[in-house]
Length: 274
Ligand code: DGL
Figure 1 (cartoon, helix red, strand yellow):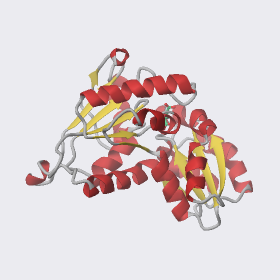
Figure 2 (cartoon, helix red, strand yellow):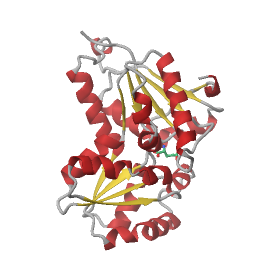
Figure 3 (tube, protein in one colour):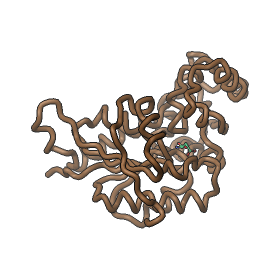
């Protein structure tokens, strides 16, 4: 048995391409349908009600694409909305919080874990709850870094200003002596150098994209859901389709930095219809 349908991945915008990059790296034979809600990004400063409403529409769109598995690449939607919505579907879906939390618990040696993310992710306390489900004794220090997303999108990944802002945001994490820091936002993996500079290179960084890919791989393998069709070809590569909720120009322009390869085109859809 195999399942040759695509994996659906969605995000509030372009950031989920960092997760898609890891999925493609680990599961190159899989077909992927990506939806980026670029018309309504960012989600990170919005209310629970709005994030839940948007997330439900994103998932409804992907369901219509007949996907076999849904990945919520957006930390904000994963933290705030996914658990409630996933109960309404039989299609398996996963967000980035659980795999990120699990990895942090496995990595920490001194029991002090830092978590950074958008305002909505941090206010939801979702990472701390997951970490404490695994081990209630661990200490979790959470911090919102709302300037990081626009800086990454504007290409400020190695400017002096970015280093200064990161040091300013993260200095409290030094005081509490964390040894592990969860990058709880799609964009933050593009700031790894900046964050390591602010924290020192002894701090272990946990990337949600890397961790979720491992868990999706395992799920597909355990449930005989891998795509076997494209494996027949040499150098297996699945088909990739990209959909967005506004004009695709900014998305396709930013894509290569997030995905690691160019995206030639993305199709615009009207997400309000879902
Ligand atoms: N994708 C979001 C996240 O991972 C960041 C961008 C946004 O705020 O929408 O939380």
